[in-house]
Length: 111
Image (cartoon, rainbow, N blue to C red):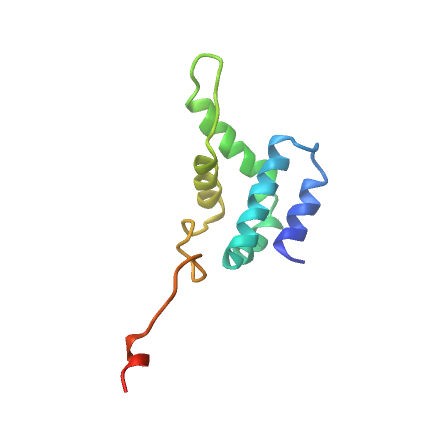
């Protein structure tokens, strides 16, 4: 089963548009952009301690610790960083398939 299928299965167990549901959406986006991350996420999702519900708790803890009065929020980049730390993923764009990066070996151009 792929990471996206596993995330969809977990997502179907929580209310639509809830915080854990949105975590699954963000993780699916990461999986689509970065296939190497999908493999890492898939390895973790069978562990109940690494579920989307547990990942969301990490984001909520960050939001709660940065509360201003009765208001707290987490920016998309903060949520991305938290999820990447939780699942042990590389920074965005740092994997082998970094978008917009072309690998060249100058030796290919030398005769």
